Length: 286
Image 1: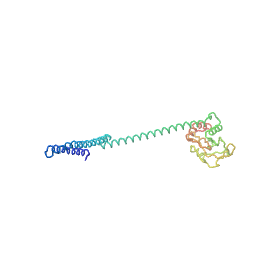
Image 2 (image 1 turned 180 degrees about the horizontal axis):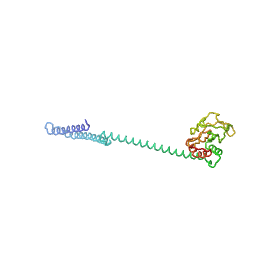
Image 3 (image 1 turned 90 degrees about the vertical axis):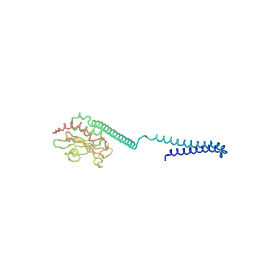
Image 4 (image 1 turned 135 degrees about the vertical axis):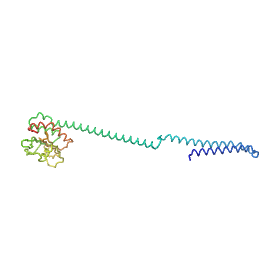
């Protein structure tokens, strides 16, 4: 049962008893047999009344305090109306959170794409500069052997190579011949290869750059500054392609591996040198 209903009943009971006592006290004063006690009744009645009033007041104050606390608790609760309203509000909040998460995800993807595009643009700009350094001064070189000498010298500055060989296609015999060397110590300077023959020939056939890492010790011997011998760890094969035909090939040996995108760099180099080489070796393509 509600505590407020019980409290009202208790107060009603106390007041009722008090009224009965009042009536009994008045009757006792009026009845001759009890008139001798009238003085005591007149003294006790106010005292009893005060006690009753204090009890009623205290209990009523307690009920009012509990009612005030309950009212504040009810005011604190959100006014949702019903469980359906609560569920709807929860669903709306969850949908909003999921939408926010999706927006954050899409924004992250967008930022990653922008960062990737920025990096690619920076790399492309850097490779354009590298290709320009490799091709610098070649336009003024008419003799093909001098042209390849200059080309290898430029490669040496960019790649820090310790050895290099440049081959050009001889269209009359369809073989690649050595046109220039850089720190190349071998008596076999007349070495040639055909398309698909050996590693060089396969690179020329595939028309794709190739890098070999961790090549065997003593595979290539290079004299380093007259102080001793060393063995490069990386070999780079760069085909020079003109109108889908390999017309030259550059082979480089280096101790240190560069972090270039070599395929992209090879494309940029080809755009700068392939036409000049093709013109000098009288390459004709359909």
